[in-house]
Length: 162
Ligand code: 4NP
Image (tube, rainbow, N blue to C red; front, side, top):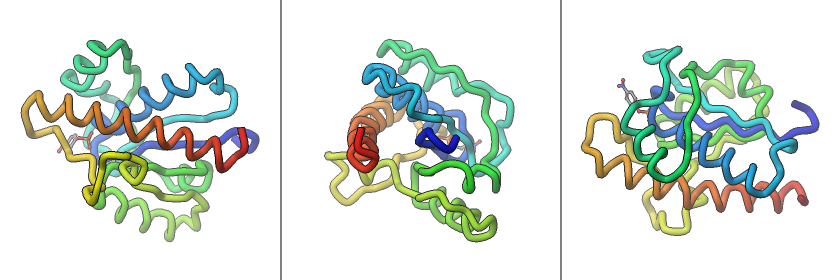
């Protein structure tokens, strides 16, 4: 990955929020014709859903907005926090777990909250977990993930000068 910028999106189960962020971010990178500059993936802090495709409700909202999500859930590893440049987490609980993993694995990844980049986040930095809620939650999550990923890409482009 050395000459590419590695961006790993992380949530709890890796079936709702982080595979969506991965797909949205990849689409934006593709539109900017920068795919060869990036390594993009997603993972969960748990292995609860390892091997599963994204949640059907996430897939439906994404498809309605023209985005096809393809991912098999997996748990984040020690190797990930040494290999990726940015680990972008969805909420404070994810951040606490990933920060401990970085310490344990002597990781070099920069851990950031996705909504640090959301221009409409105000003081709420969590992407709320939509798993146990209604369909509206999935629409809201999609909106905030899209806004945040646009700004995240701009931030990385500025930091890396491309
Ligand atoms: P995610 O959502 O972390 O955005 O993928 C969840 C998926 C599964 C569970 C919780 C949150 N679960 O408890 O199984």
